[in-house]
Length: 236
Image (cartoon, rainbow, N blue to C red; front, top):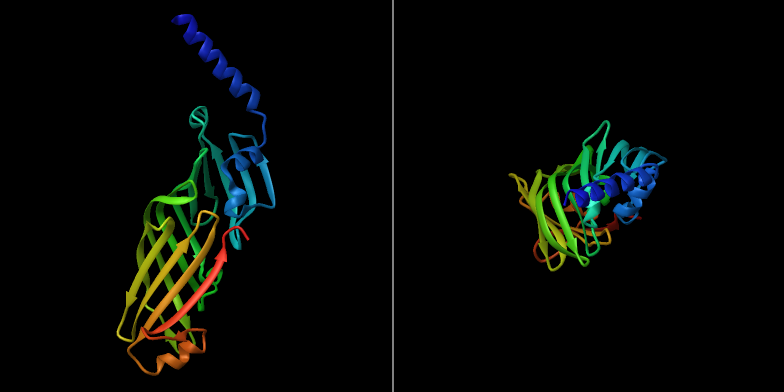
């Protein structure tokens, strides 16, 4: 048994030594970051620890991002890559295995313009401590919260929207709600494993002067209120 233990230890050390010189780009490929739309001007470092300079997630600027690959999960066929922005609200652990892919502990702040939404200069959508898992391309587990602040147009400002992440019909769903004395607002954000997303807003103005102002921003009148829909993809 002692010989077997020593042999296994030697094998592990040999494996680590062999791949220690591989570049960080190999870890990014194993984590499937291209499918998420994550890119960088330059990637430096080894397989275990590296840096993404001027990183972007689709159209979202992340700045410089530190990257670390966990060794032990690799022995079980799973890739776990931790990413954290040097300056800014972005941190996540990417998880990928043969039939599954997801994120853990995702913290990110996204400008509303990313979703094609009208808003104030500092308008954002924020995900906090979010865990998302897709199995065979279908959403299997989701937790965390998403919040939209600063949605606005000429003559109107929407209340803050807040809601929880969940799985629905194989898609990731964020259902958010907000209300104030002028109108109630609901939003559904649906995301596929491919990164494609659809955002639908439903506004119910209590002030009749709001409707024409919001219609001028792209909201369409309907039987339940004013609707707005936008589509896109994280990996465009």
